[in-house]
Amino acid sequence: MPDIRIHRKHALGLSKAREVAWKWAEQVEQKFDMECTVVEGETSDTVEFTRSGVNGRLIVAADHFDLDAKLGFLLGAFSKTIEGEIEKNLDSLLAAGSKGAAKKAAPKAAKKK
View 1 (cartoon, rainbow, N blue to C red):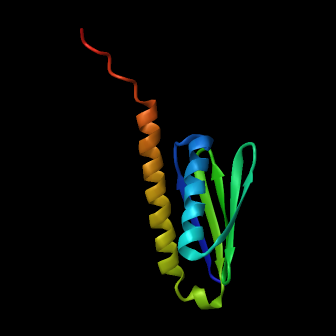
View 2: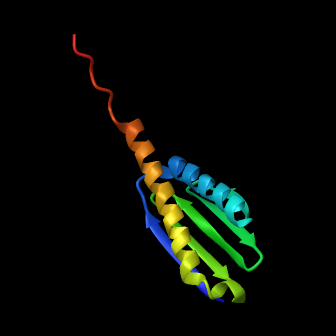
């Protein structure tokens, strides 16, 4: 079975990374009819996903995401396309998460009198 492995570093922290991972899980459940289960841990979470012909997991840590997926024979022919879609989707969510984290971290401007 073809494998997909994706590693993404980020600076979101675990709390914000969890939000991004949950959004990702919701999207793949709706778009690809995946069944996702989130297992929360102290230092990382695991999002397990499965459907006919696909199973894998997304490890969510304070500073990175690691996605591993195994594709069945029929979907294996489309592994590069599937990998590209996952990367695009995950990168988009990470970028949106980074913008939200930057807005919260930015100090408010002092009002002039």
